[in-house]
Length: 231
Image (tube, rainbow, N blue to C red; front, side, top):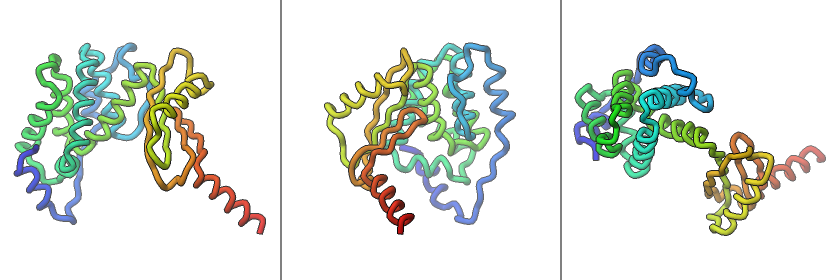
């Protein structure tokens, strides 16, 4: 999908070479100038990728391109899921300006450049490239998706099980949780089922920033602790 030159440069990069990037705070402030009240991100995010995601959200709101930006970011998430080489290419310390331009052009083929009338996504990708931060793009995409969920009034419900749950079971869980105190009025749940055989059985339910561990592995751990403390 990406140029062979970029991939070869990434493969040839010495293991001892360290990636040193300039501080991005000033560039981020220039990219997303002081936000108006209605362009403020709906939730606070942390980490450098969270800072960039918030800057992108602000820029998209101010340029009236939030919907198209969200679609583009979703498309980039899909590219990461389909192309295992992308993450290593983006973090290669030997990428030249020409390589970065080629990568951005390739990414734009997937983001629907024609729909990016305000050039919000293109300008953002250029900013990441200029600041040597293309390696953050995956995290930025994930955190921007989190911002969009909050803006749409969505509450993340992640259910981890030892094996894939059927639709009926997930629907029952969604109905039960939607009526609980963990979901505010007017909010809607976005349900994700993750599979982790290490929990042995039961469920781990994560709602927003709350976690309810009902897994068999957790119960065994508690029992072992109780036995250890008693003996």
